Length: 361
Image (cartoon, rainbow, N blue to C red; front, side, top):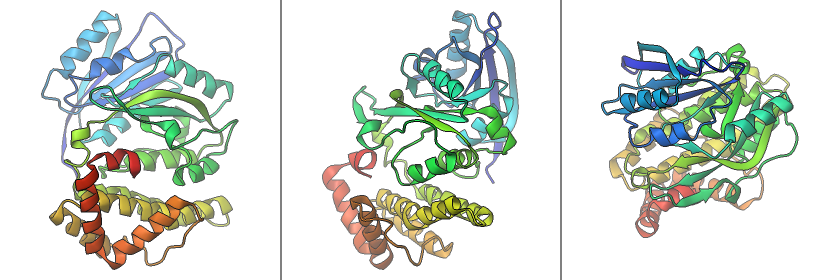
């Protein structure tokens, strides 16, 4: 269990304006260099409350936030310290439980939105009476260079879809929901007791998104790139350790959950098939590729996967697409020749550098 410590909870509101329907939840930790850009990108014409959960920052994050809201004449209506687990998952859960608006939007303190993003998204979710709305995003480097755009890898969809159908597209990487690109109806999350799992460091956002989708009757997309995800290129591989296996463990947990509720639901059975034959192999391969330059961490993770029985004995190719065949091949290579797998990707990384992690995998 993660050690608990004090988190600072701040809630700001515009007491001059009523009938707004969106609460924005922002976890922060030593965010003094980026938080202003995030706050400036918000659409204050539609926001009821901004809930900030600071994870014991040691820099000037709090002072910068307080000064910003004083300048725009928003009032701090709550300030308290609470005991909670470290990490972004517990911060988001705290914010969700404090939210009072009809809709909630989770942001990170180094990401930012395009003009009117929240207004556009709210209009779509309200007009269609949907539970979830999402849009596209860009990955942006420290120097402001666009590293990748949503439309390069994923698509949107027209009309309204049932959440289970969206899960299938999500798992097969046809579409992608990101924390910062998604707005949820709060009742959906509360009624179904959906929260971020706090024991994991990787993959907790996908677990949350999939559970929300599984419980959604109506999901819509906005076919626009309206959010910007900040990439610190120097930290992409440097900070990767065995905890990246959490992304695999998360989907084993999801598999257990779905096994218990599948009954005669053909859509759930199909989703399980995708998880077993594509998503778990894909995430396992991806994690081990990232660990491949790190000799000790690589073998420690490999040992953990086998010890905890997180390696599937058999998988089948879901379809004949290029990517599915590659995943199938690499998963078999990892199982049968882990040293060769490691050598191959260590060499690739030395030749092509870290860009492989945000563009090719």
